Image (tube, rainbow, N blue to C red):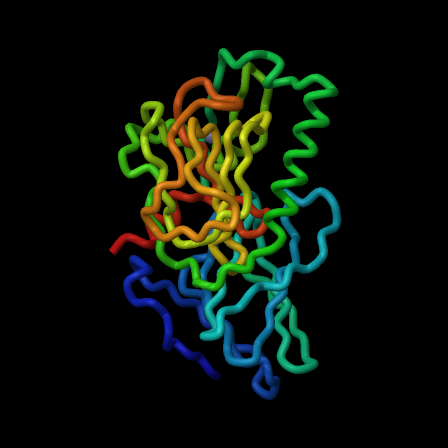
Length: 290
Ligand SMILES: [Zn+2]
């Protein structure tokens, strides 16, 4: 068994959670280590042995159409991160060394999700017209396209909240919402309520890959690539104070809280994704606590 723990940042994991998978005694595929538990709707951090390539075989109920294997970006020191979709029960990875490939299925821990009722939204924002639906589709394709390329080269292992002065979390990730009585998918991010004009800061280093002045749902929007497939987005901003291709460091101001787009009050709708897979931002801050 080869298991290289060097390079794992000691301070990032509250409790070091290690699963080591020993593969086949005489196979060149040796080992794969996870440093955080594999839980639905969260990022899982891991370590590959030298020379290993990993593909994620999407097998989540969230994917209604067949999806191609996703190559997992691996840092020079072997670290990687993978997003586990909400409602996944298994993580299937294909591990490749030289020409040998082995698939392995890992169990995913279940979580309990909240249910929320939201009333008082303008009805056209809940049931969009065909014309609005076209706009929504175009905007979501743009976001999806921007989330396909993750070129930033710092490993995203340290996180802080994007609104240090938030008043309260007004909606948690994954909550099933009833919007004006209509059932929706799990909430795609965390909502931080704060007065209009409150600073929104970069929670980790990255590069701004999109700024948008007016999206149907998310209003003034920013997207940041944090590297290795991890992206964050910021919705309903009142002001955007960064530009596309700008590099940001943790704590750099990127905008101000607002209520542009679909919002019933001033808040930041903050999402973290691994490529297109949405994960719980608050889970990241828990593992980053020192
Ligand atoms: Zn939200």
